[in-house]
Length: 199
Image (cartoon, rainbow, N blue to C red; front, top):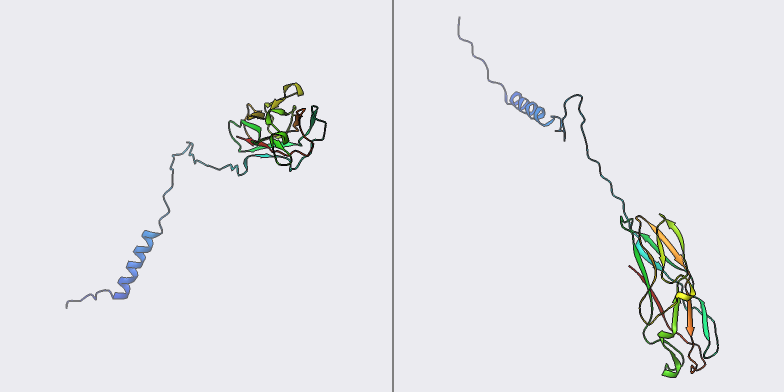
């Protein structure tokens, strides 16, 4: 019998074989993060984030606020208007302290001469008991619960505070301003600034 030659595969056939081989290697299923045998627990950790975008804020009345009128040597008192602290930090330890003081220079009229100035030592503040207004109930503490607790605003004072608890909360109080008008005070409308802050 004569010898038979076997023809070499064509280039097209060889190319098809290569494509098939590549396809088989690139379509393998992805590796799993965990592989567990039967009858065992196979765990996947899941996370999520709770945001607290608004933080800790304090809201005070718009001015000017008139607390009334009176004669030299007599006290003048009136409500400042509601002050609200809103704590939206969603913190584990959600305590805060609101403070109050009067701007330097006292309360003045006219040209602000000594005779036209009521010093901050004569400007008193008391917060009142305040009210819980929202969020998780907590321990709130007024800085000056009654008129007898009133304090002068010549230095920074605690107006209100939250002493324990976690999560979001808010509280409102309506402080009273008392002016012990000096006997030598001149007539006029006196103006000054009461500053609140929270931290």
